[in-house]
Image (cartoon, rainbow, N blue to C red; front, side, top):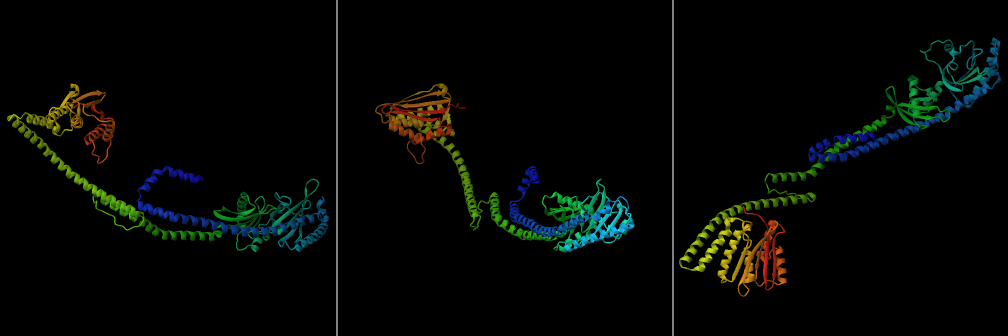
Length: 618
């Protein structure tokens, strides 16, 4: 868990760097990598799981087989040793054995001979009893040592006098009473301390019983000896195809048996420490000794707490497992080799239509708007290609329309230049008509022509969109002159506009449509003369111009319909076109708070209020 968190921390540190590197890779290769990872990683993980499972199964089977063999050894060896221990206790109860041990004085030679004879008879009897049980084929001999007499009796040979106890392994050192230990066999060489290292020592597994007097002084040692090769060779007789180093260790980690003595005590201590670290009474573990890994299967005796173990070099046990591992690695490599081309083909099939789209987009970017993707696919890319073709067609049409618009714009500029010539021709023509009317003294014609000439001069205004309020009022005056000649001076008007307002800039022909509506829809249908008034006032930054007439007016229903008409914007609606268009232009130009407002009463007249922001003419 700690390693995983550390890896996350490292990845977080280099997050931007990794993302930049990933994003710099082509999408095609990223897709290839993703497909490879999705295909190969599960196979690798599965192979790893199967390998670990195989390791577990093999080690479990080996452990089960060896543990059963070790337990079988325990069930055979320990009862045999218990028989020897029980026999030793019976021997010590024989009076003849301990009679001479308590004597303070040295025994004469004849007494020693008699004592040896009687003891040998007793020991022979018990040895026969041990052999009759037919369970301990490895029993060797009994030693009886009397410290006060320095006398040693060997059940196999004879007796020895004047023995130095330091030469006896089962006596010297810190031997514990009633314990098993490995000792040297007593013979001519050991009693005389002659080095037999070159030829090896006869080793025994010895169980020592001690008899003490009232003072606690040891007066007799009884050693029951088992041949060392009995224990160490026992496993080799019953093992089932798993050879190794068979070990028996006591509770202190000392060797009781070792089929490979050349490994020494350190090896036993290492195995014992490894077993003690485990909590189970049997099982397997791995440990390292002398730069070599060992696979150890052990079982702990429930009675003596001895550790029975089989230590095998790990390479011998896991040779089969290593073959399985190599097999899995080979399988993964073969599958990877087969999958890589397949992944490349799959990624190519996914990327190929995208490549077509990218190539087509580059053609469009280069200016080829007639490019189309011809692909008879039936998957999602079909919709993408169709949308691209549609987009390219619309873009091509848009470019063509834009080109046509540019042509029309140039034509409009030419027409504008031509239109700048036509007003001058119109003014000159009107001046000629006016001169002829004056010459022939036709006053009405001269007045109309003069008013019309002034009307057009201001209305055209050399193409300007805005004029001053004063200029707009001049247009209205000339327009009313023409209309009065038409209606025989039926229209009387009054314009009340302060001088300080006349320089305010307003849209050209703002008031003329309203005055025209007042004449033709109000005063024309009235009997007698009609009156028209134009006034204005300011409220903060707003100029309000009022055009009022005393014509026939409107009913409330007609007024409501007219108000609704000029405020709606419906395509194809021709009702009240002039007022509706004027109101829309004011709202679009200045905002929704500006525009036209109508008031009327039937038989009394109509008032139209125009509100625009105050802007002085430059």
